[in-house]
Length: 136
Image 1: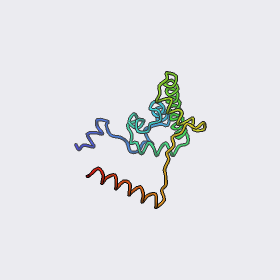
Image 2 (image 1 turned 90 degrees about the vertical axis):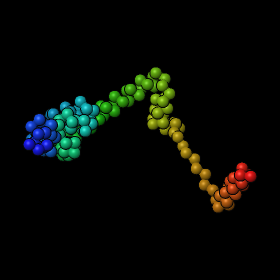
Image 3 (image 1 turned 180 degrees about the horizontal axis):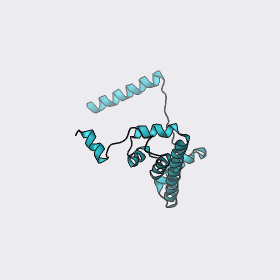
Image 4 (image 1 turned 135 degrees about the vertical axis):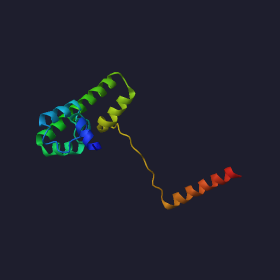
């Protein structure tokens, strides 16, 4: 008996054809329990992740279930962020303001100065002089 036959006998292979043995209801349940994570749902269903993904994206019902599961997970994450803000956790306050407070000016800006050719030459000369003065 080869490795594939042994694995099949033990029930450890992942099916490449999930149409026959996995119902839409089972897929929806797996997606819900795994917060919309296709890889984890595929493990639970004992099917190949890529084939599960194809099956989901071919079905409007399954695609909606995936979207709903991910939206619920996003809601959970947002609730935890709000709790962290209520506890006064600086990282949470800063993160929230950077993401949601942009309209009020809470945004990180990076400033760049563009030098003209003369300014660049002068800066390079100053740098070279500074290096020479530390060598001697």
